[in-house]
Amino acid sequence: MITDKHQRSPKYPKIFSAGVCVAIPPVEATPVPTGAPKTGFMIESMVTTIVRNIQAELKGETPDFEGTWNAVCLADMGDTGAAFVALPQIPPRNVTWTKIGKWVHLAKIGFEKYFLYKMRNGTSEPVYEKHILGLLGIERLKDVKRPS
View 1 (spheres, rainbow, N blue to C red):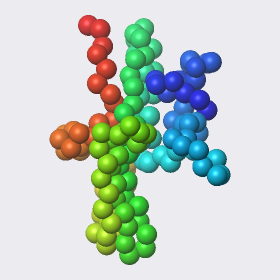
View 2: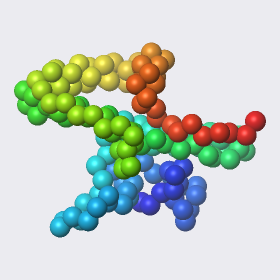
View 3: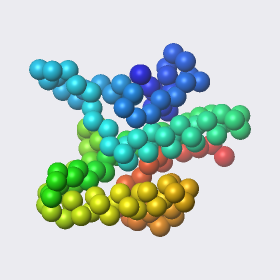
């Protein structure tokens, strides 16, 4: 589904979309047409944008929240893995960082346990997590100036 910067359909603005069903244009032409990959954090950015924009609409405010589409990924590959950060995921990027090693496999196991704990306890974005990611420059929403 094609979306605007607020995760809404340009044709039907009451319809929002997140995740793998969002049609992100390819960055470059490839022999086999492909869409851009989406990481969990990028999808969290999209969903946070949707939730905030629906809240704004319900309050009679302008839904002007925008996701950062930042990418943070721990890709497990058996007993090794690759970790990367791309801010934002779609070029031009301000930050790109990649590391490979056995530590990524262990980090992925730890992250999965942490993520399941958060979901079981209904805490999608704990204060400490938001603070630590913020110190690293990794945010879910763009800093959009809202009218007072």
